[in-house]
Image (cartoon, rainbow, N blue to C red):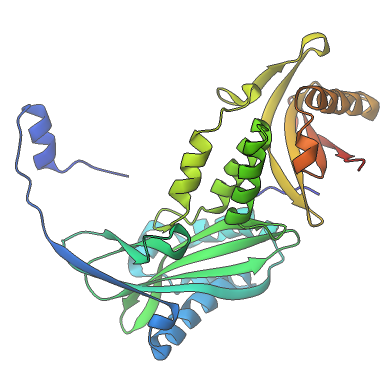
Length: 338
């Protein structure tokens, strides 16, 4: 029922001198022009070549021989990420979330920057509608591509965002980002709508967690941004954070006569087509499972008392106790009765 997913800037010397001397400097501005085509705007030949390069890379990365995927990296990417580091990341953070089904391309973008002298962020689509645009990073020179590949896992959807550069007549991978993109069929836009409805009811815990999860689902890495992300960030900033999530984890939640709990994480999890509230907490060592069950049930009771509205938005709660000083965990599931 649970899973673990997991889961740069230097000041130019001239600008630094301006700061140290406390004087205004006129920094040179290098003009540039940019363009971006998406999906059917790209020629069929180019779209096929780009898509095949990205899809083959992801398939090889998830296969038995990830070194085949590594060979598709640009020379620059190989310099930054050695093969052992690439393989380790696949084995520790990506493959455990599988198996992956229905691997498919859901977006292809071909962008170009002329002039400017440095990497730029280029908008693809219509800025008047947040859901209809993305922004991608592009280096000056020949056109570069970003491909979004989505796959289904047991409960969720995942994406691989692949940035490709032309190198020696072939499309090579400059960077790849892996992220959660959907929970039990719900997209960021879907969760945002549910969050807005909960906000109208003044169910701040539900709204906060839904907005936070929606924001998480918009993550496409440092070189690719969904247009809806800034709006969801604004939504989340306007919600008062629940008192037990103020500060840094572990969050100490005092619940009166029931004592206190050390909360490690509070979020949402998709299981069996439903969304549950999940709470992880640090528990004292136990010798009998009855002791840890009692601790988990006490936490559930405290949440029921303080935030009963969570049951209106979620199918139930999953509480996981993490034994202090060990890696042992114990989970308790409490389903809604209705």
